[in-house]
Image 1 (cartoon, rainbow, N blue to C red):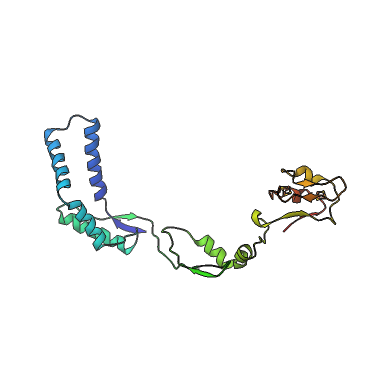
Image 2: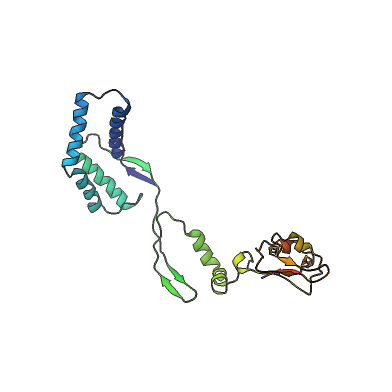
Amino acid sequence: MKNPGLVFWAALTGVAALALSLSAAGPEPSADFRATVERLVRAARETNGAYDTIRGLTDSVGPRLSGSPGDARAVAWAEAALKRLGFKNVRAEIVTVPHWERGEESGEIVSPAPFRLSLCALGGSAPNPVLSTLRYFPEEYHAHVVEHRCPAKVCKGLIKFSILADKCTGCMACAKKCPTKAISGEKKKVHVIDQAGCIKCGACLDTCKFSAVEVK
Ligand code: SF4
Ligand code: SF4
């Protein structure tokens, strides 16, 4: 969104950085320049000006997320403060900043016992993918969380591959494809899957031509 913003702080920071770079790499600073810098440093150390300025901003403006009413109040506050300090040519420029607004948050634990939660969204976070799936596919969440099953048969922690004895011909094709050697059986005999060795890769399901591998 378009929003008036200030460039003064950046300008002041730039002056300080310039002074530092001059003293670090450039020619020896003049006596006048050095005296001015020392006067500024002494003033910063001996007065509460910086602290009072920050306190004025935080106490009188409060939260000021970019693009919010507080942000606009902060810009107005800074303009007034700089003019009060005697700066010339003080003005707010139009800049584009990200804008985020907190919506309604709600949540609850559905298993093993229902429990309402207090939530607070993170600024700039994008909850829509989760909100959309919660709204349109609640049965998917119920199946996974409450019934511990994956209807789409893709969550490895919730599925199990097994071989149907009445369909297995003992062709051995799946055993040859299994990357963990979790399938055993003799030729023309029913094969079995060792669940402890199965990594749920699905190779046996893809290989079997007799629909003898099931996943559930
Ligand atoms: S590929 Fe199918 S039919 Fe062949 S052994 Fe494996 S499960 Fe049995
Ligand atoms: S799913 Fe993969 S690891 Fe498991 S038995 Fe089948 S081929 Fe082997």
